[in-house]
Image: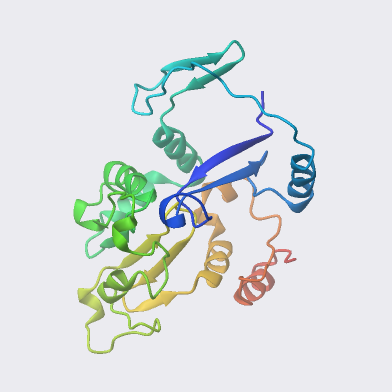
Length: 258
C-alpha cells in the first residue's frame, strides 16, 4: 500500500510546454528526486520500447470536481480527486506547532510579507498563513497563480524578487538600505518559486542566504515538533549549496555533520 514513487506535473523550469515553464518529474518512494541509478535504468529501457498503449474513450477528468470524485479509466486504473491543501496542512501540523505560530503572528509589532511570484505556492500561502495562522490578507503579494507568472521569472532571489527585497529594506546585493528605518519594515519576508520548493527569507533590513537556512533550522530544532519529538537531529549533511555555517552549528550543538 506504499507508493514506490510519484509522477509530478510541475510549474518548474524543466523544458516543456509554452514558455518552457512546465515539466514532469519523478520522485521515488521517500519523496526524493529520482537518483541516477533509477534514471539510467529508465533510459536504458526507453531504448527498447517498440510500442505503447493508450486508453481510448476514457472519461474527461474535471480537476475542479468535488473531492472524492472518481474516474474509472480501466478496470484497474482509477483517478481520484483529492484536496492537496488538506494533505499539506495535515503534514505541516505534524511538523510545526501551529498554535505557537499563530500566537507569534499575533504579537504586537510583528508583520510578514510573502511573495508567491504568481506561482503554485500562492494558494497554499493563503490557506496556511491567512486561514490557519490568522495573518492579514495584506501579508500576501502576487499569490494568484498565472500561466505566465505575470511576465516575471518566478525565481526567489534578490534579482527576481525585487519588489519584496525593496519592501524588506534591502538593496539589490542583500545589504540593508541604511536610509530606511527598520522599525517601519515587515518583520519577516519570504518568497517561493513557481512550484514552491525553493525559497527566499529576509528580515527587516537583513537577508538570510539560502545556504544558511539549514544551519538556522539545525540550531533551533527544539522549536520544531518534527525533530523535538524524536529527541533531536541524528545528523546533518552539507552539500554544495550549503554554507560552512552548518559545520559551526553542528559542532556547537554536538550534532554529527557529514
